[in-house]
Length: 157
Image (cartoon, rainbow, N blue to C red; front, top):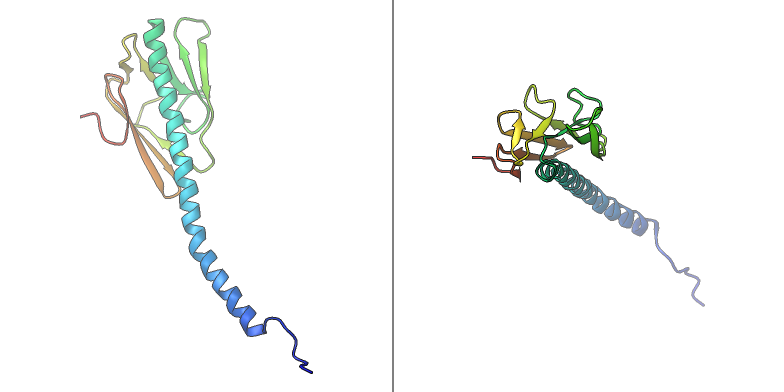
C-alpha cells in the first residue's frame, strides 16, 4: 500500500507564487498607463466637444459665446461653463464637468476665457490658444486657432 499523499510541495507552491508575483509586477504599470491614456483621451474629447459647442452656439445664435471656468480666474481644471452674452446675468448654455483628480490644464498666460464671435472665429484672445493637458505620464495638446478650428495635437500654422 502506497502511503504518499497527493498535492503540491512547499517548493512548488513558492515557485508558483514567485512566477505570479513577477507577472503582476510587469502587468500593473502597463495597466496603469492604459487607464491614464484612456482617461486623458476622454477628458480631452470632452474639452474639445465643449469648445466646439461654444463655437457652434456662437454661429447659430449670432452672438458671442464664451467658455470659461465657472469659478472665474484661471481654475481651468474645475467646472467650465459655456454661456452667451445676451442675458443679464449671462445665459449659461452648458456646464462641463471638472477634470479628474490629478489632471492639469495649462493655458497661455492671461487667458481667462475663450470667446467665439458670430462667425465661429476666436474673438478673444486675439491669438491662437494651445491648451496643454497632463495626467500622470500622459500629455495632450489642444489648439484653438483664430478661425475657430479645434485641433488635437499639431498646430494652427
